[in-house]
Image (cartoon, rainbow over all chains, first blue to last red):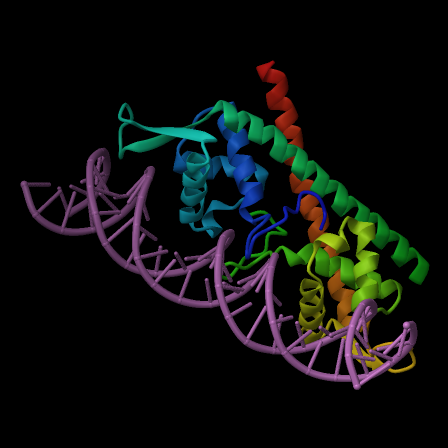
Length: 125
Length: 125
DNA sequence: AAAAACTATTGACTTTTTGTCTATAGTGAC
DNA sequence: GTCACTATAGACAAAAAGTCAATAGTTTTT
């Protein structure tokens, strides 16, 4: 399977969440943030907060923290409910670079397919 | 979530197999083929037959047939074991066009992320 | 001040997907 | 006939992703 597609254990390998997690690392390299704010920021990359269950985002953040790519702490300075503020760790920066490269590879694979499709369409018509 | 990411039932929505199935439809628009031959043809799109279990390919073909996007028949003309020859149906052609468009969208989303990453890297250094 | 509404996070449950392993079955070679 | 090879199919298990509901503190409303 194509590079960037992972190798994969059952149900696993490259996951749907990969793109989202990469977006999160990028956002956190820009500035630290918490669940709800990151949710809004994801808009920039085509996500639509209204249409997604935010649990998925929280799970992604927890997974990233378990992997040591982000770190979190409770911020009590804010008004309103307590927020768990996330920020990027040095390993997170490294992973971000790698993941971006992986997505770049994936983009190239899609481009190959697009090109092939254009050729087929031309030969058929 | 980004267009091209499906909406999704549990564990579902946009699946890992989406890219592979689109490749298969494209290959079948070029010419009909069977399991093992398609496996080889997938090389063009970055797949590595040695490293993947062919069951996955067969399942993909059966799924596509269930969805009416391809049709199959036993070819007895060949020497060697019987082969199930697959070919693209008209609905399959339509889906192929849609799926390519969906992947195009996905590629654009990746490009957005790549661009954003370049900007962040520049501002950090 | 009690109730309601909102922000924020977490955890349990369920379905679907996906990878692996094994079974079947025909064909050609020795 | 047995063995190896090509080709396809099915069962099983593990993991991921989606939904739903629970918790908990904080403003706002009445």
